[in-house]
Image (cartoon, rainbow, N blue to C red; front, side):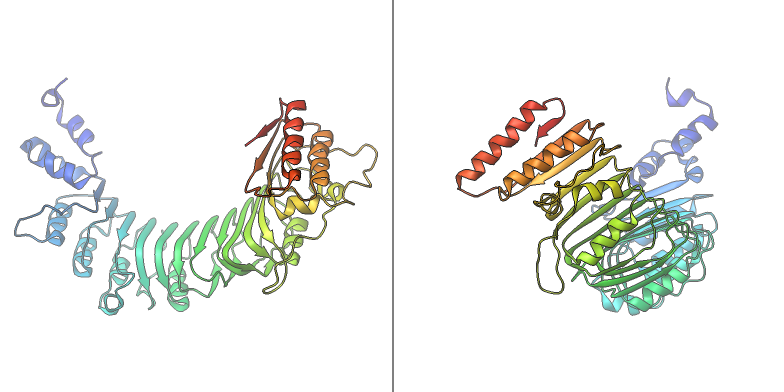
Length: 421
């Protein structure tokens, strides 16, 4: 069926689902009938290269303004193409009453002078008082943004930003009803304090030395991911179900969570954690169902130390609901100490364990490591799969070949369960 034969309402409905500015502009040139559908657009998206081939007299800011001025009730605006603060102010003056979702590529992360201009791009956003979601790319936030309270804002995402502590704190105070907060690739922040009563999902990725401190007071938090913090305090955790803590550049010195009674997934990653932080996380997460551990060393300050011995039986008795266990590096070695399996109680089983992924990097203590792998198979009555990853085993000693042969034997004897990756 040709578009010309469709009723006006159907044509308007179809074309209202366009959002790419170039497609919208092309449709306007087809016919008057198609052009009359422009006011019914709900979403408009300007890609990065929207004006690369533009050679007209109007500047990009004016072109965007003209398109927006023709739309009756725009709900979503996404602008990746370059723009000025003056242009943004004019756009939001047109659409502020209906706009619910705003995404901007700010491109001012290295332009200190730009953040001193008045009004700045950040300040202009305050006009869109009815926003429900805001996403910003490439932000320089060294001064507190002049924002009124965004009462309807539920989701704030900032990707690639240079932030100062007071400026970021001021921005959060203007968003008291957030349920979703995402900071990715952000630098400059040293101490973060977040108090949001309705926050449920939070992802924080701080770039730099990995020495930030975080204090979180969010009683409804369910999902938390933190990267780049050395000191972490989250006291209200009764709703927390998914927790991921990583520090690729620095060390994790202190964690303070309290009992994690609702926790189902826990991930601990990094080069070095203090053992006190590791042992507390394992103690608090006794109800966890999926545990991912990839920490290479413990030790305080500059000293890199292996993990102390972890008793195999005690560990699994302390985590009776564990279904999936991803165990890498030092934690696997700690479970493979000589005394770990000497006192196995009669009737001991690992009741819920279904999947294990083990990373093996050294043939050292091969006998104990094989004993631990065999014990996982023996006592994990419901174990369905065991993946063994052998990485960077560079030793030229014959023990390397012997160890690999033993793993292959284990796989052959349990080929329905064990796989070598």
